[in-house]
Length: 222
Image (tube, rainbow, N blue to C red; front, side, top):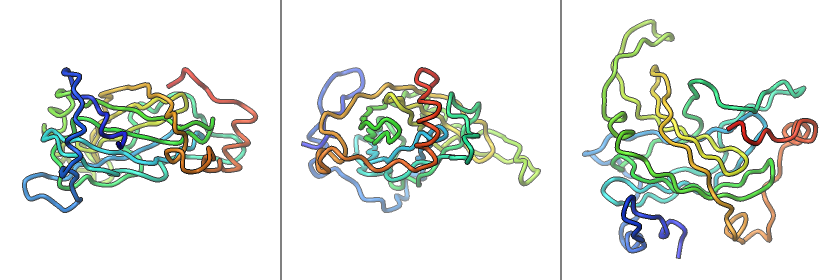
């Protein structure tokens, strides 16, 4: 059974594997729900490959592979980047709109941390307080347009870091990001690609490899 089927229902400890039977949704736009953005970023040089990010919305519908692929990253030459810690107001990262879904209740992420290398998975429970933030319109001053607008924090950014760290923020185009969750994932026992690659992870870029060989990985800073 797929890892998503082992997600745990908040506060009840009940498996909901049955949700996967006939409940996986397509990404067609729903007229009843506005799309929200799901993006991923990582610290400088700490490259990852997202195998899958699966969303469960508040109506218990499962949206497989709402995210996958390369996360947003900076890899400055000459080791001039700084991977330790997170920005005060991080951007949402690289991703796409989750269309047709209601607001998220839980997100499952499985990713390869190429800096180590290691394969992690994390179950991120989205609290009701975060959904209230996503629903609430707020006034914000946009510097690039030099004007006041009203928008919502419906851009969800997940920062992935070595050690299985997954940190979640909500922001908007002109609203400062606010932290809503931090989860320490676990090592996926099957390894990269669910054991289908013979234990081989994707390769680390030469720029990132050079930085890590010289300075190491700043565990504990995320």
